[in-house]
Amino acid sequence: MRVTLVKLAILSVVMVVLLGWIWPNAYWALIVILPLIGVGIYDFFQTRHTLWRNFPLVGRGRWLMEFFRPFLRQYFFESETDGTPINRMYRTVIYQRAKGNLDSNPYGTKLDTQRVGYEWIGHSIAAKHHEDYHKEARVMVGGPDCTQPYSAAILNISAMSFGALSNNAIRALNKAAKIGGFYHNTGEGSVSPYHLEHGGDLVWQIGTGYFGCRTEDGHFCAENFQKVARQDSIKMIEIKLSQGAKPGHGGILPADKNTPEIARIRLVEPGTQVNSPPGHSAFSTPIEMMHFIKQLRELSGGKPVGFKLCIGRTSEFVALCKAMIETGIKPDFITVDGGEGGTGAAPLEYSNSVGMPLREALSFVCDVLVGFDLKKDIRVIASGKVFAGFHVVKNLAIGADICNSARGMMVALGCVQSLMCNTNRCPTGVATQDPKLARGLVVEDKAERVARFHQETVKASMEIIASAGLRHTSQLNRSHLFRRISETEVRRFDEIYLNLTPGSMLNGDSPPKFKQALHESSADSFYPKHYVEETEQGLQKTNSDRT
Figure: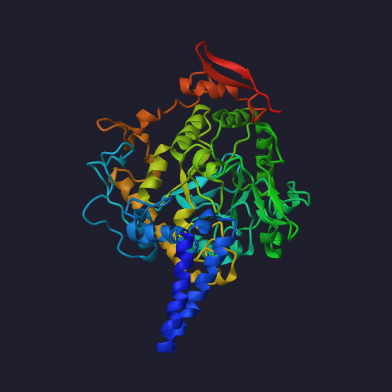
């Protein structure tokens, strides 16, 4: 191949020279031919790419096709139900609702209703009619120890930090929250001026880096926390234990991204690498964590305080519930993030194979809370691929009280799923810190779109609930949902995820599937003191080596 290309290069130059004697304008072709020959010569001698050495110039076509492949697939070859993380069908309905366009679906469903995993809600012969004047579904968040409870919408903006998103994206999301009366989670990057600019309700998320409320050496600072937490816009505080996209991984803010502005907001030294460790330094046991929750509630002036986690080893969540019982201190809410959750950048293995998916995690958390008789005082928030009304209804029926959406709100904001979040080259100005790209995002226009998407999605949710003969989200339960588990068998969700009797875990009357986690967990340790495994002789303890 290399010999052939050399011959073609020589032949091309000779032909142009000969043709130039007859028609001088032919020499202009050398402007194209000579650079191509130069690239071919470079490919011939470079040592990094075998394809380039063996197929000079032509081998570069592979890289060209790899570059265009995602765009060609998305815009020309993708069906309505293809595309990940968000398929075209859901992207389309988000765009339609955000823009106020017609969002009805012609000619019937595009889903295969016979495939295993297909889900639906059972409607009622006594269906009700939902009108816009009917009272909006809202949920009060705040347990017995909370003196400033918050009335939350059933759909809200999930955690996304300034730094991951541009300043204009944060402005637009917060203005949308103000317009639509729903909350906006700050993400663990602290509260920026852009979060406060339009006065939308905020949930301040505090991660392991304690950004915005840290000492110089990275530990929690009560004084700095109190200054921010008592602002009127801050409605709730969320302690981030883990997130679905990369649970247990921690994070790094590279020195080149740690600008003076971000450093000022996060209370770190500009131009330095800042590490967010996998675990918290403010507490080391479930009991200590409950006292930390109490401390934050007092420092914030009695505002709701909760935590967010992706379920990993189930006994660790049971340990948290045991600590709640032992101390009498309860969070006001728990956000359950599914393992399918999104992020700007995560290792492939963490995105694909670490953390429990939302449906299983949500049912587990709700069941354990009921088993310990805690659910009546704690609101559960579901986060993970919430794009349409049925997603909201499904999560609420499983046991959630509220839903959060990040990527749904990003698409409403203008995201085209170019999958360039980790490059700082987001073409829509959403997930970038490049001011030239961010300026393309018009705050006023996009805020209206996000607010409209939220309004239409909540309306669709309430219409589905009304079709089931219900008036409020609190009336939903697992018996309303159905799932195909084989080609010939369908089960209700309450048959798949059995409901527990309140307090059953306190008196030892819990189902067998919870026995392992109950035996393994302890209120004074996140990590199991002894692993408990199923053997031929039943559940058996094994040593837990933490070294």
